[in-house]
Image (cartoon, rainbow, N blue to C red; front, side, top):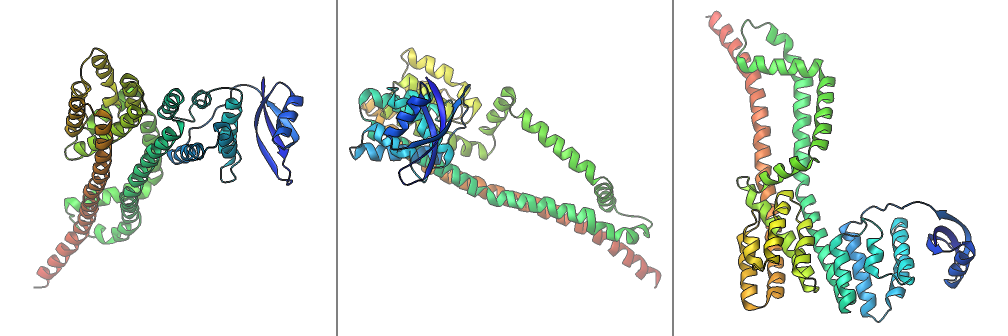
Amino acid sequence: MANYRYRAQDAEGKVVTGLQNATDEQELHLRLRAKELMLLDCKEITGKKFYKAFKNKTLAEYARQIGTLLRSGVTLVKALQMLSEDEAATPYEKEVYTAITNNVMQGVPLSEAMENLGGVFPPLMINMFRSAENTGNMDATALKVADQYSKEDRLNSKVKSATIYPKILSVIIVLVVAIIFGYVLPQFDDLFQSMPVLPLPTRIMLFISDFVKNYWYAIIIFVAVVWTAWYFIKKIPAVVYVLDRAKVHLPKFGRLFKVVYTARFARTLSSLYSSGIPIINCLTIAKKTIGNAYIEAQFDQVIADTQAGEPLSVALSKVDGFIAKMISSVRVGEEAGSLESMLNSIADDMEFESERAIQQMVAMIEPVMIIVMAVIVGFIMISVIVPIYQSYSTIGAGSM
């Protein structure tokens, strides 16, 4: 059976596009006619289609709509068809939704249809839907998935919004320094050259100013080369591991990073475990959502210890990078036989703390950057004012 990309016209004369499986063009025409569409043209898709991953916001909206429709009594196939025809969806989203709908209509489970699209849907979402297919609570699971990715999107949005001011301040610092050294300070060249002796700060400043003025293009090339090299170097697994390990051991910031990583893990583990997925599979999937290679590398031992019969709290306590509060909560849940509810509770608590941690990180970064800017400006002012003051002092002494 081949895949066709088609253009068709509906009963109102509107042109629609999409994907459809069919043995030939004749069957494609019949399939579209069953949807009240008239085929205009089509093209067989050869080779494997590569899709880009959906953002958290799109994942949340897709899962929420599926859960809401199923809870309203709509069948899964009908719900998927409605989503693939949603006018609010982008052409790319419609293409993905159509591919899923076509697979499900042919008897493929929804989780498998999502998995067949490569990296569009994350393993967490696929496995939660797979578990729901076995337990029969697809609507509740879909709404839980929506809640998971809504919270993830909200946390990411807060991180981005919180770092806007430090980024803007960084750009301002660079621009101010470039203007001062490249344009303002050269205006004092004649004055400084007339002085027999210049203080050390002034000589340093003039050297930097001359270098920026005469070799600005070399500076731009150097920065571009360093940035490009760093872009590729930080993708090397060994480098990522070292950097991620350093993050959780930084003074002040280390604990804040731990809170954020713990919140991600706790929420994912809570969602998976409450969906009925075995704890080993939960750990295998949840470790990939932490966002820290150093912590993730320790989970091979956690999984091995858990498989050997060790309590989850004991296995997690060996991980360097998690907040002890989560470990204590898991231990209480195990002892009380209410691990699921305790995981939900600690996930909510950790998410609240992670939001505060992000605000604290930004609150600590801002004054540091302001101090850096003040030091640079202060150094420049001293470098300019001191020789001028000495010159006036010399003139005053000579006139007496």
